[in-house]
Length: 425
Image 1 (cartoon, rainbow, N blue to C red):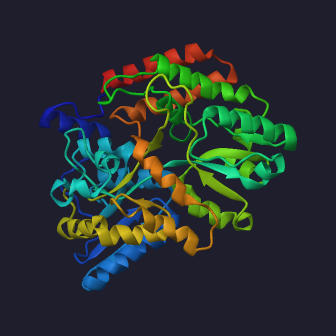
Image 2: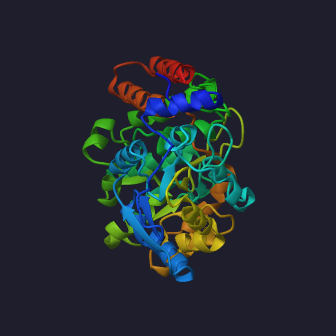
Image 3: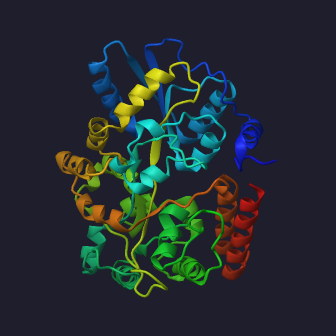
């Protein structure tokens, strides 16, 4: 059964029906015309969203906005159930993973008229579009993958801290020296796409999908070589195995002093600073190491993703929701979000509002040095069929690590898996 829009209104309707989603006759989450229900999936960002809502309602005292936060899995279960029962929240977050599904099924309101694209990063704008090229969300944020490093372990091993000039060779050399001198792990390469091997692929001049998302590129030599390189990192004694990561995550190993480096998203930083407050000043962040001899390009790349604010196409409070969406996307609304520290605003020129938060709170990490990575950031790998192929590719990666197939066999399976998923949709 086809789940995605291919062409024309007839197929759009068929797509919506196959998903069990319907864009018609939405009642909305609230029957109160002056009240908006705002659903998000991150409890850590609730205060920031409430601050934006407060700023809006101070200007519009006749409006009430209730921010509801839930967990990631529960969020999507609730949202799909709400779409099916025509009771969508008035305002909600839309992740790029799900944008095509909801936009192409006619669930989301067209926001093209309220989004001035030049105000936001290109990646944030691109992630807010459906297959038809229309904008179905207001850009909320933009993100980066960073390298976290344990200053104590670097100091003990007398290894210089990583900087913007580091390459993969430096990453390996530092890892080996730290392991030799301290007995602790170096770079911890856990199996992940966005926060793991995708970055290496694009640093080497490879790609996961063609630019328009219509072709898989796993067997492209530059892509395959980078995937092999990332997988082979685990063969070093200074890197934990995937079995070890399954029992103890990289973050736990890092903050317990058992590992010196790992990659994480900037969206994790506030939570890490809060959770591991006793480690303040003992760790820092750095740009990702670059490929020393890429097949093409400069060797620099980092995967960047984003989230959008959205509303239902036929919501009961659509007019009011659209007005609030405009504020969420405004410079004022985006600045308030940046000052919360959890997310980097999608609005161009407001990166410093996010950077400043860490110093204001006394968190001793130099986040300012990672902002230049946006200059060579790569849009999050996505196409309409991604929900079908992504978990299968993830399992193939784990099968390679477990020795159930060779790396070459696994890469060939990835190519076939993604190609078949694209053809189906």
